[in-house]
Length: 373
Ligand code: KG4
Ligand code: ZN
Image (tube, rainbow, N blue to C red; front, side, top):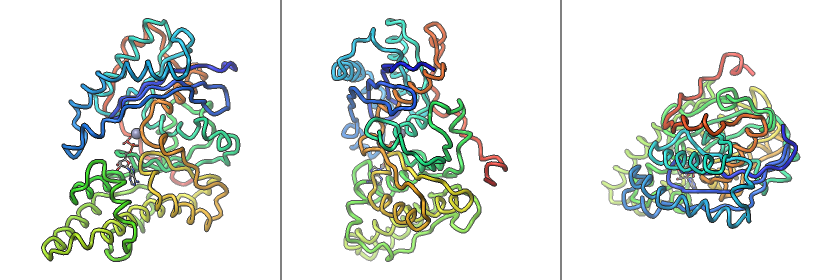
């Protein structure tokens, strides 16, 4: 493991954020962000109510070089000074991923730098170890339970050690449970679409829920009484759509919107908390963290904090700053930097073969031994 600080260029283009960042990584310290430029495509996709893959890849192609130039400029770093290039190569929209992977390969090849292919979700985990989380990093009470709630994933991970020690299969080996169907983010987004809110809908639901009665509509909390640490949100979407149809018919939907959104939000937050509580009862954790776009939800944070206080969890709730909860290249650069320190990287001719993988094999179910822990 190198004990010298290393400069990493990170590139993220897996969905609708085109981002580049330069971070400095040193062993057992938080990755320091020296520069980051992100172009959000939300406005481009909004008219369609969701991400249009072809529009996403074309826009990445147009903006990615400007993001890289800007990140390097902010950092005051020349390409020659970089130790490596890290890029998200899985999972995501294949065309969008390919833009980042191709640009990263070309950049690394021209400047004769190693390349690290990063799993997007490992990047989200590493958002916990970015500079703004310095004190967090020093004091983590392992094991750390991480609730990953991005637009496409709802998962629980039990992380037992700092990223420098992570095995290559850290995601598969630490996974305790995940959604069997829709992600919590999708439950927010699909309901928002049903109600005519702009994409992405999570923040709109939260805003509309303010002042609403979370107990007015009894939406299901799937798998609540079951042993599994998996989640399920597709039934919730159906229950909400039936309720919306009823309210529309009675011409009372507009007036009921705050109660409807508050009840939906409460059902999602409740279902998430329930599995965290079950995980704690199975094997107490020292700290709880939440990462991914849905971590922006204040009701979720409040509920997790209250629950952890009741259980006596030592550290709760650790969460990256909001701008590092949503997709960004700093977390990818950090993940790449930790792998580089372990000696896990590709050399120039090796990475010419590297491909983008839209949907890698889902992490396997927890083993019986892991489930018992
Ligand atoms: O992690 P992220 O930026 O993108 C992915 O990697 O998928 O997550 C986006 C998700 C969307 O589903 C969005 O609706 C949700 O995060 N989200 C929220 C809030 N802000 C963003 N959900 C609930 N409440 C919010 N305030
Ligand atoms: Zn993400």
